[in-house]
Image (cartoon, rainbow, N blue to C red; front, side):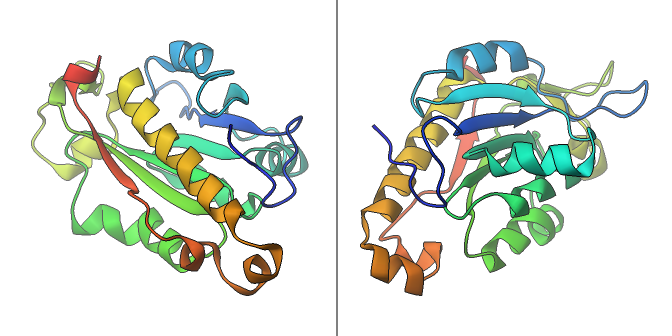
Length: 204
């Protein structure tokens, strides 16, 4: 099983948080099959507790929730900035809607995570237009602005590949001796990790 000692995360406290976001009466960047993912995830590959989470319960409460998480999974957006409060050795999975790729998306969260040396970064890009929609709008809308706000179905098999890599990476990180671990940033201690994944409709 996975070892979660990095960052003093005990087996009782570790959890996977699915970040769900809502904007007043209009919802966007929603994981449409969130409930089924939470049920599938609990006790699975990462062996911990999985739950959905909407930030906004107060700063202290939000920080407690984040500090107890080993993994945060969420659609691209400012809510993922909460990951910077996670314990060292934790992981964040950024989901990018179909068509939201290129120089602009790369400038935000991924660039910041490349500077960060304590939290591991993973990216799951949606590769099939049929997995993402924005209300009544066609999935194949033409601009990156449209793509940014799509709601998406996340195939279980796609997320399973990401979680297996997360587990491997954390195990590899924790395998290093304590003295060396204190001296080196997390990313410098990894021999190899695949951090970018693509989800296709065939994964349903």
